[in-house]
Amino acid sequence: MIKKDFIIRTLLSVFLLTSSFAQGNRVSLFNGKNLDGWTVLKCEAEVKDGNMFIKSGNGLVQSAKKYQNFVLEYEWKALSEDKWDSGIYFRYTSIPNNRAWPKRYQANLLKGKEGDVGGIKGASSKGLLKDREWNKFKLTVNGAKISLMINDKEAWKGEGLENLGAGFIAVQAEVPGGGQHLFRNIFITEL
Image 1: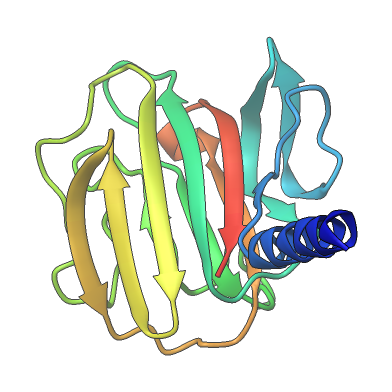
Image 2: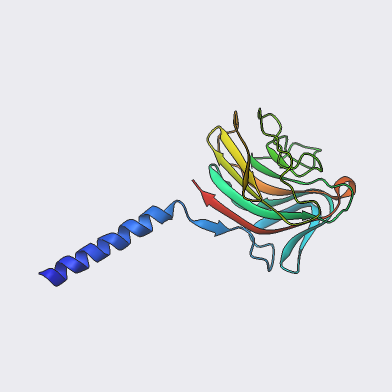
């Protein structure tokens, strides 16, 4: 009887534990070996020394899957010493004809505007970036709310996202005007 009760409690605990992690699993979007799980659009990208290397062109490296509410973690580094421009697009479903990128939303990686998201009041960060070094961003998108941490410090919180449905996530290539970039440790946790 005691043994049977122990087995039932153990199985119930395992079931509850795995159920609680089912929705909140932190998943790697980039394996550091190849671009499996990504589609390269209108640009050149490759894996170099375990990093996603945005090599040339104006385009996107787009996730194969769409995401609605999530925590996206990534590290990035600009290879240009004086100017850079890239970004992370999220919650878009298509790219307008004759454009390299979607209209919005984008967590900007333009020099001087790193982490800014256009159209969101207060979504602007200053003073948290490490110039010409690896920087860690943690972008949380949940319903109409959005927040960003840069290098483990809160950058800003805002709300007002209008595209509330699921959409792609993409790394922006803007190499002719913004230089080459490296990305690594790209993880997502669906909320």
